[in-house]
Length: 195
Image 1: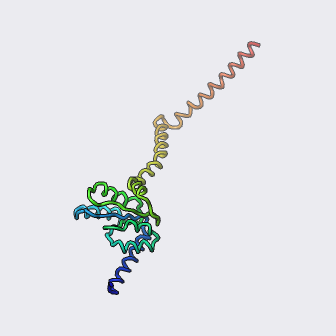
Image 2 (image 1 turned 180 degrees about the vertical axis):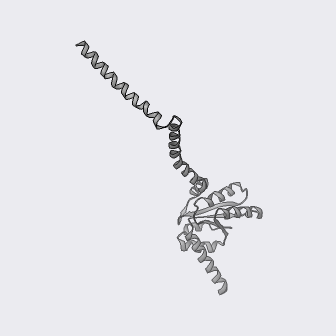
Image 3 (image 1 turned 30 degrees about the horizontal axis):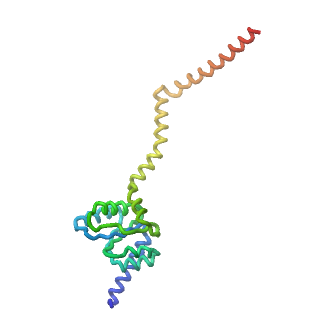
């Protein structure tokens, strides 16, 4: 039986892990077998730069944290070596990085399962998340969509200026109605002469 000090440390680890899971928007479980130190260091650096917290942790501690957060369905993935990657505000970073690494890895590294917004998600959903572009790319696309109408308006204004301004366009518009007014007057004169 573990000493009181070790038991207290484990309880604190579970409490910290529970808070981490509750505070995150997404989390993924991975098997990290067969990964060498250089690849592990590179992976951890990429995750850290993306704001993803990655930790190797014992399955029993994860199981207790999952039971306290309502994610007990993830217990089925708690076999062998397990690491958890959580993100507080980016839904796709962990999935994109870990699934990409798993695809490149020929050894035992694989994504086992995950959750999003407190709900367990399927592997299909994880793969879909991994294929989404980064947050910066999505924001650039949205800004481009907002900018397109403004750019079109600016080109239209510039075309008016290039033609000599609003004054240059106005006489052409006034001349056209005068010509159409003369045509009915000529028709009226022709009908009077015929009578």
